[in-house]
Structure formats: C-alpha cells, structure tokens
Length: 106
Image 1 (cartoon, rainbow, N blue to C red):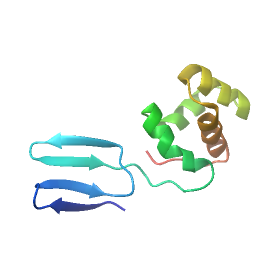
Image 2 (cartoon, rainbow, N blue to C red):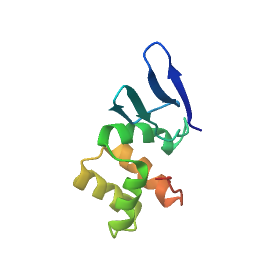
Image 3 (tube, rainbow, N blue to C red):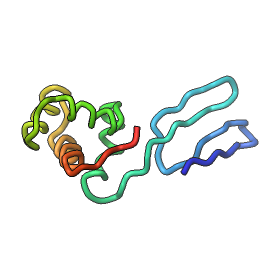
Image 4 (cartoon, one colour):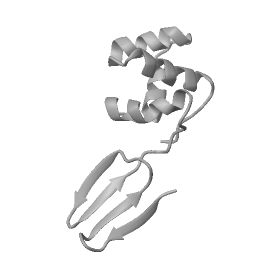
C-alpha cells in the first residue's frame, strides 16, 4: 500500500514503502516511486536485487521470457545469461518463479 507523507522542514513529498526504485525531482517536491514488496524467502526474494542490478522490472523480465521462444527451464536460464548477462542465480530464480505460473504486476 502506498501512502504519502510530507516532511515539513524540507518540504519534500515522499511515498513511503519498504523499497523504492526511482527518485525524481519536480520543482520543490521530490517524488519517490516504489517497487512492489517481494517475499523475504524463495525465488522472489532475489527480485529487488534483480530490479536494481539490471534496471528492469520483474514484469519486463517475464515478457522477455515469454517472448524468447524457449520452453525448458535451463534453456531460458541460458538465454538470460547470454543475451542479458544475467547471473545464474538471478536467472534461475526468475525463470523458476515465472514457469511456476506467477505473474508480476507491471
């Protein structure tokens, strides 16, 4: 859930959440966009690191997986590693979570 708060001393507006993905300055107001909160265990626990390191959302990675034309888990892992220089652990977590039928919100 996103909530807004204003720091009266610095006149900054911030959206509060456990993580954020981007900060933009608009005049005298700073807007912070937040990423979804992911589980602390299992494959999805890698997702904040994946989004930060590679600069794409999990929904974008899932589109790449869907559009790659491959079906086997390890073939898709190899594709992400070779085409996007993704590390094995990140690729494996993302592919496993996606092939299990999970869908990230965009």
